[in-house]
Length: 451
Ligand SMILES: C[S@@+](CC[C@H](N)C(=O)[O-])C[C@H]1O[C@@H](n2cnc3c(N)ncnc32)[C@H](O)[C@@H]1O
Image (cartoon, rainbow, N blue to C red):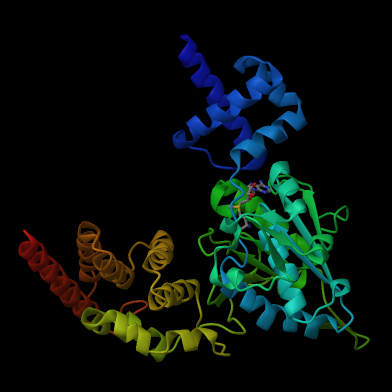
C-alpha cells in the first residue's frame, strides 16, 4: 500500500470512528477537513497518523479534542425568531397552565454550540417576566471547545447578525470593542455541560436532563445519520415531561413516527409535543401518566385546518395563474396561526401547508425543502410536483421546473380525468395535466425568447 493510500484508509477509519461515536454523517467531502484535524492532533501529540488512530480508540480526551475540531458550532442570537415568539406565546402559557404558577420551567438547548441559543432563551424568559429562579436552563454540546466559548459569553458581531438580536438592549448584550458580552446574570443562569446526544447518557438526573418542559434541538439532527436520529428522537421524547415541547430547526429531518410525539405546525416549522393524557382514577383523582401513546400527528392546538381557504393556494387552477399573489391573499398564514382543530389533519397536509407558508414568506428554498420531504413520503403527489415546478420556475431553474411539470403530468395523467387529486382544492387530475402542460409551453416560449 502506498503512503498516500495508507493515509487515505486511516483517514477513512478516523471518519468511521467519529460517525460511530457521534452519529455525525461524514461523506467524501469531509475527508479534507478530517485530514486537517488529524494533522493538528498529530502535531499536538507528536504521533504518526497510525498511532493517532490507535490512541483515538482509547483516549476519550483526545477524541473529544478531535470532535471539537470537526464539529461546526455555528449559531446566532434569536436564530429563527418565530421559534421564540412561539415559546413566549404558546409554550410558556401552556406549561404554566398545566403545572401551576410555582413550577420551575426546565429547559434544554441540545447541541447549543457557542451558547447563543441558551442565552437567547435566558433573555426571552426575562422579557416574559420569568425570574431566574423560575427557570432552570441547561445547555449541552459534544464540542468542549464550543462549551468553553459558551461559558465565556463573549461573541463577535457574526453571532448578533439577526434583526431581533441587533435590537437587544445593552443591558442584555453589551458592546465592548469588537465584541458583545452577555450580561453576567444570564451567564450565571445557564448550566453548560458535555453531552453526546448519540450516547446513552440521558434522560439522566445527573444534569437534570429529565422531566423537561422544553427542548430546543435545532440544526443538529440534520448532521446525523438515520439510526442516530431515531435514537435521539426517542431519548429526547423520554427526557420530556408529559406536556413538554421539542423544537427542531426548520430544515431538520422529520421525527414523526420515531417517537410518539404530536406534531404541531407553527410559523417556524414543525414543533413536537409530548402528549398529556389526564386519567381520572377510581378515587376521582386526576393523574398524568409518565408517557402517553399518541398518534404521530394529531390536530394542533394552534395549527392548520384542512379547509378550503387554506388549500385554495394548492389548486392547480389558481396556481397556474398568479401563484404568489394568490397565496399571499388567501389567508394561509391566518389559518396556520388560527386557533382551530380538525380531525382531517394529516402529515401531508401539514407539510404542504408549511411549504405554502414558506412560499408566502418568500422563502422559496425552504418551501422546496418541505415539498421534497413530501415527495420523499409519496412521490406520486402530482399537486406537489406542480408546485415544485412553480417554485423552480420562479427561481429560474428551468430544467428542474420542466422536470417537475412532467412529473405532475405523469402522475396526474395516470389517473382518470375526473379523479380529485390529494392536496388539491377539489380540482380533478385532468385539469392539473392541462395546467402543467400550459406551464411547460410557457417555459418553452421563455427559452425560445432568450435563445
Ligand atoms: C449548527 S450547530 C447548532 C447550534 C444551535 N442549536 C443553533 O441552531 O443555532 C450544531 C451543534 O450540534 C453539535 N452536535 C453535533 N453532534 C452532536 C452530538 N452527537 N451530541 C451533541 N451535540 C452535537 C455540534 O457540536 C454543534 O455545536
